[in-house]
Length: 545
Image (cartoon, helix red, strand yellow):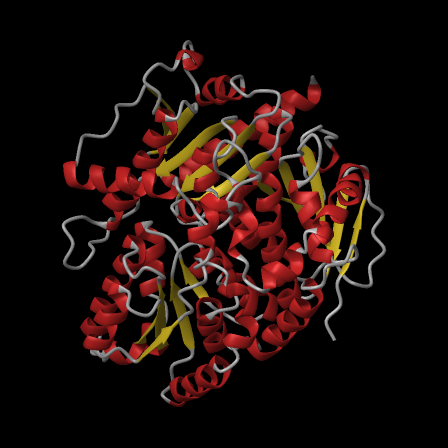
């Protein structure tokens, strides 16, 4: 039996007291489950009308369980026991949290970094099948990943068609191409579900089920949660979470999500995309910050911060001021957060189902690939790090001659209600320890800090960076791959692609007036070590001050 528990203090509790009665009186919960597209106003109605299939995803997706189990059995009988997911954003984040929580192996390839791609295609190819997930069917990263795997399968004497499984919307370019190509299996997802709400559809279930996760139990939990969420009642956990996310007054628009014993691995990363891409637009929105119990943001007491703790159902967590705790198993939590994010969009006065600023970075990257311009020259080089900026007039960087001085200058542009976004275009598996700089930078800046691996964050928090409140400053880290990797039948390589993605996003951010500091590591291993040392030094200076 699914159980959900919620508690709140301070601003979150007050928001519930002031917002819940209105949400209940307006019958928001029952209208949402009735797919009432008018909930977000006339301008959002057209989009909302084709994006509400997720409210019944648990029920609609139930027939997939048997199909996925049958395919898994076939693959295992053929000696294929390693599943690789080629997907981005909503196509990869849900399967990652589902399989990690279940304790089963799924290789998630959501990068264009040549080193990470090479590592994926070199790992157990003889016993590998890939799931290529793309809602539109035209995602450049996913298409490139499919191409390299298909070429490597063929070169190894493996029937590539028998090892490629497709998840896409019916009628998408990929749908038609895959069927004509004769790939092993094509799963169609509900086209009336947006990518970030698709965790309980084929996009989340196919790779997770093939990897061995219990997707039937996941759907059962989500369906039970849905029965609770549809009630117009002040005790509705989804309504209470929505009020905390989007109804505080004044708005606490930095939502610090902390894993505090829930047992759900990586849930905050999935919620980050859901919230940021759904709410960050029209100059408003709430910024999710993935943190841990020891992160500076948790104890900062900042007026724009709300802490949300993910806890176990039987835990007795003592909340600080302006904090929320929420407990429930994975399927239930996914339903609750999707529901709460959609309702928070109503409170914020925005459409939670569009992403008007996501395409800008993609277009900029495509333009750079077509034009192949020379790289922006470095302002200076410090050790293994070249320092650049995307801003035409970067007065804030004047006088800097070291990486430490450049980072200090960037932090000096932070507004009292600002945030720092660290964006790292490197192999996220090989360089995972670099994420440790997040806490140190939060301590040094006294502001919330997000950390994203590129290009996957472009399909996640990238929308908030351009469309949300204009208070972000950006630290971008790129690196020289050990060896570039060609993309079959493409005029550009993976190295050129990830470089264009980084440069394109930096350009768009700069065009929006955001300060952007770009650090390029001429030798990745040496540069990562240098950057960690620089940030640790800054943190030490801050603690001594």
